[in-house]
Length: 278
Image (cartoon, rainbow, N blue to C red):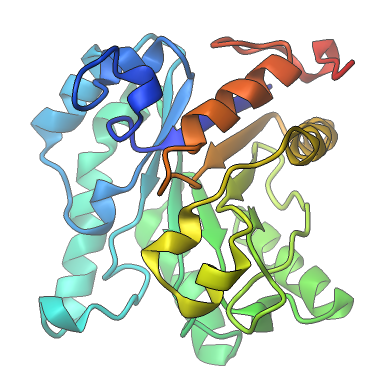
């Protein structure tokens, strides 16, 4: 099964039916999954999450982004982070996602680690601690430092390590010629879930690290490549999630809708073996 979606459900004019922002009901009419990024900054109240459950169909799912404290992302403007505060965030997120888990609507919790999170013994130990904190919850890991994937041997070691922790390694599409980019390396480390996260190929702005780095419109040829990759991963994983994050210019929704059409699944889910690009 391949599920295509977007980061957030609000900032997509193509889905809003003329309103300033799209609503969750607007969104679910088009896609079967969404990534919730607001959790990176603050943990939502359980009542809000319960409302998400009520407003979505039974087969709809959520990817929930881990809080910045949980990924050790530097946010100096928000003040220092103590070990106690970080542990509290883990506890708060576990409580917040319970309604999604109960309703079978939690696809995974995404840990997007910062560029400062290098491959070293301390980071390996921290990933083990993450698994302990989160128990048996589904987890996905996105690296932003190429030390995790620097060469074929290290890439295999990283994949094997995440597999041992039952974590999905996120396959990213982003400019990787510069020092702060990760190469596109399709891999499945969890047979339950494979994850593609698409940031665009705006190499100039990516090198600068600005918000404009997510301003990019994928071509049909690029989308066809992602369709082929998703279908290949679907042979190895029960579910393949494809999330478009190239939305500075509001290109994510049109690109995702195009990919769904290529997969013959506009607004629907189909078993991978039924998909046909041609």
